[in-house]
Length: 299
Ligand SMILES: NC(=O)c1ccc[n+]([C@@H]2O[C@H](COP(=O)([O-])OP(=O)(O)OC[C@H]3O[C@@H](n4cnc5c(N)ncnc54)[C@H](OP(=O)(O)O)[C@@H]3O)[C@@H](O)[C@H]2O)c1
Image (cartoon, rainbow, N blue to C red):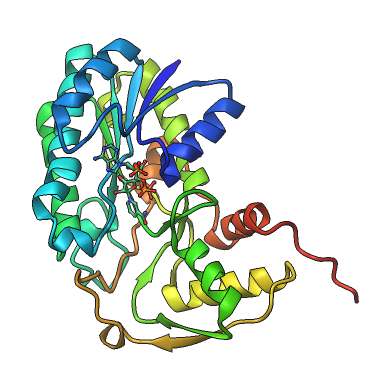
């Protein structure tokens, strides 16, 4: 099976490459400089040439704060390019899997968001990602849109790597404690994407198309997540680091972020029989890869 993936150096595209290779799947990644999603027409030649069985649309403009001022660029990459890719998938009569985000929601719901909840993004990034969803739905029914959140991995840039870097030089780090969400491991996203890709390539059943939520099991806050990262690092020989919990108001950013980013994964489980590992299990795997295994307990 030939799987075309957009993105070359990102967290999810690299995870797809790593896992796909292990599973003996042919992963063809396309990214800068051969294609530039800000010029969506650049997608056409490499996609046609690759003759894929399925497309995974992973690449995105992910600089959430910068997007507030680079609105047009973010819209081209996150909104228009997925639309072009979906129209190409429709022409080639193949399915497209696309990654979207918890940031399509306002974050003011008390419970975890389901696929039936109405999106109402509060940032430019969220609005452009929602535009990508809309353009894909308009282009082809043969799509699976997967909204994920708080992505981390051994690859690219992410919160776990930032905390580990800060912990090298500081004894205390201030982290926001009033945003709630589900940390999601990119290698787990890749596991789910490859399983779904294999199903939708062989089965045209419309009930395995549509929009789904895909996050690590469990929920936490950024401050609790940071605490777990530093505890895990300490068990692997790093020095202790304290987390000072602060509020969103204490840490103003150009883009507004949802206070509640929790996504309900029941539909994904009911439809594909897929549930990602609990986030602490995945965090352990990520720290093993980034730092090494836990040190032996002397007791
Ligand atoms: N990260 C999160 O917390 C998070 C949360 C929810 C949803 N998501 C979604 O999940 C998907 C994967 O996220 P990720 O964390 O793997 O993203 P990432 O690590 O930031 O990687 C983004 C990828 O997109 C590529 N890219 C950016 N601009 C491009 C352009 N103009 N042309 C071609 N390629 C371009 C990047 O290439 P370069 O490295 O060369 O720039 C990189 O390979 C995205 O669709 C994102 O919106 C992410």
